[in-house]
Image (cartoon, rainbow, N blue to C red):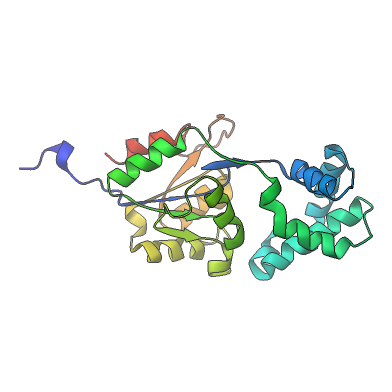
Length: 231
Protein backbone atom coordinates (compact mmCIF):
# COMPACT_ATOMS: atom_id res chain seq x y z
CA UNK A 1 0.00 0.00 0.00
CA UNK A 2 1.39 3.44 -0.98
CA UNK A 3 1.88 5.99 1.77
CA UNK A 4 0.57 9.49 1.09
CA UNK A 5 4.12 10.85 1.22
CA UNK A 6 5.13 8.39 -1.52
CA UNK A 7 2.36 9.27 -3.94
CA UNK A 8 3.31 11.08 -7.10
CA UNK A 9 2.06 14.68 -7.18
CA UNK A 10 -1.00 15.29 -9.37
CA UNK A 11 0.82 18.30 -10.84
CA UNK A 12 3.30 17.05 -13.42
CA UNK A 13 4.23 20.36 -15.04
CA UNK A 14 4.65 24.00 -14.08
CA UNK A 15 4.57 26.80 -16.63
CA UNK A 16 5.73 30.25 -15.60
CA UNK A 17 5.56 33.80 -16.83
CA UNK A 18 8.94 35.55 -17.04
CA UNK A 19 8.94 39.29 -16.34
CA UNK A 20 7.40 40.14 -12.98
CA UNK A 21 7.25 36.47 -12.03
CA UNK A 22 10.80 35.14 -12.27
CA UNK A 23 12.76 38.29 -13.05
CA UNK A 24 12.62 42.02 -12.46
CA UNK A 25 14.08 44.37 -15.04
CA UNK A 26 15.04 48.03 -15.23
CA UNK A 27 12.10 50.33 -15.94
CA UNK A 28 11.72 51.37 -19.58
CA UNK A 29 12.39 55.13 -19.13
CA UNK A 30 15.66 54.43 -17.32
CA UNK A 31 16.86 52.06 -20.05
CA UNK A 32 16.06 54.73 -22.62
CA UNK A 33 17.95 57.33 -20.60
CA UNK A 34 21.00 55.07 -20.56
CA UNK A 35 20.88 54.29 -24.27
CA UNK A 36 20.31 57.89 -25.32
CA UNK A 37 23.10 59.01 -23.02
CA UNK A 38 25.46 56.55 -24.69
CA UNK A 39 24.63 58.33 -27.97
CA UNK A 40 25.24 61.78 -26.53
CA UNK A 41 21.56 62.63 -26.12
CA UNK A 42 20.29 63.87 -22.77
CA UNK A 43 16.68 63.37 -21.80
CA UNK A 44 15.26 62.99 -18.30
CA UNK A 45 13.42 59.93 -17.04
CA UNK A 46 10.35 62.15 -16.61
CA UNK A 47 10.43 63.29 -20.25
CA UNK A 48 10.87 59.72 -21.47
CA UNK A 49 8.11 58.43 -19.20
CA UNK A 50 5.68 60.99 -20.62
CA UNK A 51 6.65 60.08 -24.19
CA UNK A 52 6.14 56.39 -23.37
CA UNK A 53 2.63 57.04 -22.04
CA UNK A 54 1.69 58.95 -25.18
CA UNK A 55 3.03 56.26 -27.50
CA UNK A 56 1.28 53.48 -25.58
CA UNK A 57 -2.03 55.26 -26.29
CA UNK A 58 -1.15 55.38 -29.97
CA UNK A 59 0.10 51.83 -30.58
CA UNK A 60 -1.86 48.64 -29.91
CA UNK A 61 0.34 46.12 -28.09
CA UNK A 62 -1.60 43.32 -29.79
CA UNK A 63 0.17 44.28 -33.03
CA UNK A 64 3.31 42.78 -31.52
CA UNK A 65 1.89 39.34 -32.35
CA UNK A 66 1.85 40.32 -36.03
CA UNK A 67 4.80 42.66 -36.44
CA UNK A 68 7.25 41.00 -34.02
CA UNK A 69 10.58 42.94 -33.95
CA UNK A 70 9.20 45.58 -36.32
CA UNK A 71 6.70 46.61 -33.63
CA UNK A 72 9.48 47.71 -31.27
CA UNK A 73 11.29 49.61 -34.02
CA UNK A 74 8.10 51.56 -34.72
CA UNK A 75 7.56 52.03 -30.98
CA UNK A 76 11.10 53.38 -30.53
CA UNK A 77 10.75 55.72 -33.49
CA UNK A 78 7.55 57.22 -32.08
CA UNK A 79 9.15 57.76 -28.68
CA UNK A 80 12.21 59.39 -30.23
CA UNK A 81 10.02 61.77 -32.20
CA UNK A 82 7.99 62.58 -29.09
CA UNK A 83 11.30 63.50 -27.48
CA UNK A 84 12.15 65.77 -30.38
CA UNK A 85 14.88 63.50 -31.75
CA UNK A 86 14.68 63.52 -35.55
CA UNK A 87 18.27 63.23 -36.76
CA UNK A 88 19.09 59.60 -37.65
CA UNK A 89 15.93 58.59 -35.76
CA UNK A 90 15.30 55.48 -37.87
CA UNK A 91 18.80 54.13 -37.33
CA UNK A 92 18.66 54.92 -33.61
CA UNK A 93 15.28 53.19 -33.28
CA UNK A 94 16.84 50.04 -34.73
CA UNK A 95 19.86 50.29 -32.41
CA UNK A 96 17.63 50.63 -29.37
CA UNK A 97 15.76 47.48 -30.35
CA UNK A 98 19.00 45.59 -31.00
CA UNK A 99 20.88 46.70 -27.88
CA UNK A 100 18.08 46.99 -25.31
CA UNK A 101 19.27 44.22 -23.01
CA UNK A 102 22.84 45.52 -23.03
CA UNK A 103 21.55 48.51 -21.06
CA UNK A 104 18.89 46.84 -18.91
CA UNK A 105 19.56 45.14 -15.59
CA UNK A 106 17.86 41.77 -15.05
CA UNK A 107 17.58 40.11 -11.64
CA UNK A 108 15.97 36.93 -10.36
CA UNK A 109 13.54 37.41 -7.51
CA UNK A 110 14.99 35.94 -4.28
CA UNK A 111 12.45 33.09 -4.15
CA UNK A 112 13.12 31.81 -7.67
CA UNK A 113 16.35 29.80 -7.74
CA UNK A 114 15.58 27.57 -4.74
CA UNK A 115 12.06 26.88 -5.98
CA UNK A 116 13.14 25.96 -9.50
CA UNK A 117 15.82 23.62 -8.19
CA UNK A 118 13.31 21.85 -5.94
CA UNK A 119 10.92 21.40 -8.85
CA UNK A 120 13.73 19.99 -10.96
CA UNK A 121 14.70 17.49 -8.25
CA UNK A 122 11.06 16.38 -8.03
CA UNK A 123 11.04 15.68 -11.75
CA UNK A 124 8.42 18.32 -12.53
CA UNK A 125 8.48 19.51 -16.14
CA UNK A 126 8.96 23.26 -16.43
CA UNK A 127 8.49 25.88 -19.09
CA UNK A 128 8.29 29.60 -19.78
CA UNK A 129 5.31 31.26 -21.47
CA UNK A 130 5.92 34.95 -22.06
CA UNK A 131 4.48 37.83 -24.02
CA UNK A 132 8.01 38.51 -25.21
CA UNK A 133 9.83 37.64 -28.40
CA UNK A 134 12.42 34.88 -28.64
CA UNK A 135 15.22 37.40 -29.10
CA UNK A 136 14.21 39.05 -25.81
CA UNK A 137 13.51 36.06 -23.58
CA UNK A 138 16.71 34.32 -24.65
CA UNK A 139 18.79 37.33 -23.60
CA UNK A 140 16.92 37.65 -20.32
CA UNK A 141 17.36 33.98 -19.44
CA UNK A 142 21.01 34.09 -20.42
CA UNK A 143 21.61 37.05 -18.12
CA UNK A 144 20.25 35.10 -15.12
CA UNK A 145 21.87 31.78 -16.05
CA UNK A 146 18.65 29.96 -16.95
CA UNK A 147 18.84 29.81 -20.74
CA UNK A 148 19.12 26.02 -20.85
CA UNK A 149 17.19 25.28 -17.66
CA UNK A 150 13.61 24.94 -18.90
CA UNK A 151 12.07 22.09 -20.89
CA UNK A 152 10.24 24.52 -23.16
CA UNK A 153 10.30 28.26 -23.81
CA UNK A 154 7.40 29.86 -25.63
CA UNK A 155 7.05 33.45 -26.77
CA UNK A 156 4.84 35.39 -29.13
CA UNK A 157 6.76 34.51 -32.28
CA UNK A 158 6.41 30.78 -31.57
CA UNK A 159 2.66 30.98 -31.93
CA UNK A 160 1.71 34.34 -33.38
CA UNK A 161 -0.56 34.87 -30.37
CA UNK A 162 -0.21 36.66 -27.05
CA UNK A 163 -1.47 35.80 -23.61
CA UNK A 164 -4.31 35.62 -22.67
CA UNK A 165 -5.03 33.74 -25.92
CA UNK A 166 -5.38 30.06 -25.10
CA UNK A 167 -3.26 28.95 -28.07
CA UNK A 168 0.01 30.13 -26.51
CA UNK A 169 -0.66 28.04 -23.39
CA UNK A 170 -1.75 24.99 -25.37
CA UNK A 171 1.32 25.24 -27.61
CA UNK A 172 3.56 25.04 -24.52
CA UNK A 173 1.59 22.09 -23.14
CA UNK A 174 1.96 20.24 -26.44
CA UNK A 175 5.71 20.77 -26.35
CA UNK A 176 5.83 19.54 -22.74
CA UNK A 177 3.56 16.59 -23.51
CA UNK A 178 1.46 17.58 -20.50
CA UNK A 179 -2.28 17.94 -20.10
CA UNK A 180 -3.93 21.15 -18.81
CA UNK A 181 -5.37 19.32 -15.80
CA UNK A 182 -1.93 18.37 -14.49
CA UNK A 183 -0.26 21.73 -15.13
CA UNK A 184 0.11 24.83 -12.95
CA UNK A 185 0.62 28.23 -14.50
CA UNK A 186 2.14 31.01 -12.41
CA UNK A 187 2.13 34.64 -13.47
CA UNK A 188 1.78 38.14 -12.08
CA UNK A 189 -0.89 39.55 -14.41
CA UNK A 190 -4.57 39.01 -13.65
CA UNK A 191 -5.84 39.01 -17.25
CA UNK A 192 -2.91 37.78 -19.34
CA UNK A 193 -1.65 35.15 -16.91
CA UNK A 194 -4.34 34.08 -14.46
CA UNK A 195 -7.48 34.34 -16.57
CA UNK A 196 -5.69 33.28 -19.75
CA UNK A 197 -4.32 30.11 -18.16
CA UNK A 198 -7.68 29.33 -16.55
CA UNK A 199 -9.47 29.68 -19.88
CA UNK A 200 -6.98 27.22 -21.40
CA UNK A 201 -7.78 24.66 -18.69
CA UNK A 202 -4.64 25.00 -16.57
CA UNK A 203 -4.63 25.58 -12.82
CA UNK A 204 -3.64 29.25 -12.46
CA UNK A 205 -1.81 30.90 -9.58
CA UNK A 206 -1.38 34.65 -9.36
CA UNK A 207 1.90 35.66 -7.76
CA UNK A 208 1.32 38.89 -5.88
CA UNK A 209 4.44 39.49 -3.81
CA UNK A 210 3.27 42.88 -2.51
CA UNK A 211 -0.34 41.80 -1.94
CA UNK A 212 -1.78 44.62 -4.04
CA UNK A 213 -4.26 42.72 -6.20
CA UNK A 214 -7.58 42.50 -4.41
CA UNK A 215 -9.37 40.13 -6.78
CA UNK A 216 -10.79 36.92 -5.39
CA UNK A 217 -8.35 34.56 -7.11
CA UNK A 218 -5.89 31.88 -6.03
CA UNK A 219 -2.85 33.90 -4.99
CA UNK A 220 0.64 33.26 -3.67
CA UNK A 221 3.04 35.78 -2.13
CA UNK A 222 6.19 33.77 -2.84
CA UNK A 223 7.15 31.34 -5.57
CA UNK A 224 8.05 28.89 -2.80
CA UNK A 225 4.34 28.42 -2.15
CA UNK A 226 4.09 26.42 -5.36
CA UNK A 227 5.17 23.44 -3.28
CA UNK A 228 1.83 23.57 -1.45
CA UNK A 229 0.11 22.63 -4.70
CA UNK A 230 2.30 19.60 -5.40
CA UNK A 231 1.25 17.55 -2.37
